Image 1 (spheres, rainbow, N blue to C red):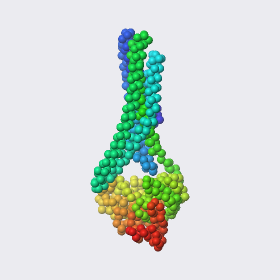
Image 2 (image 1 turned 180 degrees about the horizontal axis):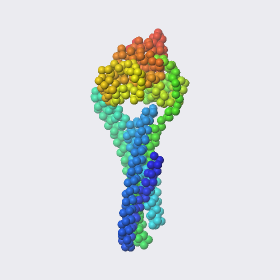
Image 3 (image 1 turned 45 degrees about the vertical axis):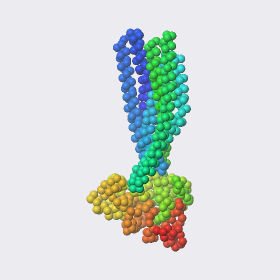
Image 4 (image 1 turned 90 degrees about the vertical axis):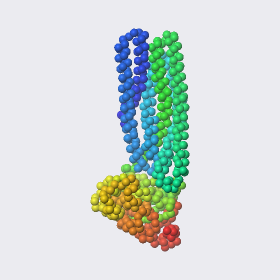
Length: 539
């Protein structure tokens, strides 16, 4: 990439330098008229300079296209990967679509166009000062003033560009959320409210874009004022010098063409510079989204003997967890119960590493999570959350997730998860292709596939968040019995209080309002006037 960027730099400088060609061609032609020189030579030089300009500009476009291709491939891949490794609340869809396009057009292309403008300006101005020192100094002073005005407004340009990016991100997030909830919107007739919300977000976005374009138009107007002023002043100086005999007609015509090559890059350069300055903030945003903590070289263990949580605190919007203290021992079976919104799912997300605690300690074998290898953590802790997702692929690939397992291990998991009970009735068995979001199977069947996916990992710790909500009691009881027979730690959230299941677990963790209210066995908690007894009697 560095080599390609260097090529882009060189070709952009050469592209700017070719701006002199037309000025030289004009002077050659005018000199030919004045001095009656060899026209064959003039035509030959004219054609050579013309083809040189065309070739260099064509090479520039090809190199810039390659740079953009390399950039898009690299950064889209990095952003995509970062989404799965980061717990940051970034809108990665907006980064992959909107922001990456801004960087492409207003940063990458603009950077090399700006280099071309600078090269063209310097070369043309150097040629002009060769004709007349005073003429060149006057034009340079006007150019510097124009540039200073542009730089003064740089910060405002960045602020307006980042505001557009933030509004675009919010719009993408809202529309995605609305489309995902389309069935609810139709069923409960809330289209009017959703449409008003969409219209407001859309209006805010378009207003932000309009203000940004208005600011750019203001900057372009200032650039035009200075550019046209330079042209008029240069024409006036040229006319005076011809009258005094300092310039010949050919030099005057060449200098006017040079002014075009000074005014044009200055005019375009001011607009490009403002776009470039605005895009810098988007580049910073892009880089920040890729700042994922590197935990690929952290610690690993032969076995997770315990997970200890000490004084853990976590806050997300209006919800807060505080002072969570518990220790999960090897091969013990735990059930979390509590009212809706008490923090059951959040606790599982923190233990699985899907979320990051703000304060307190979360350790495996007395080692903090931040010091543990990321890939090891995902392999050692298998997590099935409430939102079951299946890929548009075969049932087998959805379970194995494209890894190879021994047939006896695979068949054993099919039996324990209950998947074998329904695939035997399918024509293609486990090679049946699941439609998008598993539309061709039931909710209970999707849950069994997701459960089989977890069991295939042979993890030290299994976390289950209402994994049996779509299954009947008998199937749930059978699967839980099989899971409890495994030599691993199990922590699960149950949506219903079932006495037989609760009695089988070692400990029941009772949560209330983001805190652990009490912990104990079924017998311990029911033998006293506990909060668990209150919840149990409300079932």
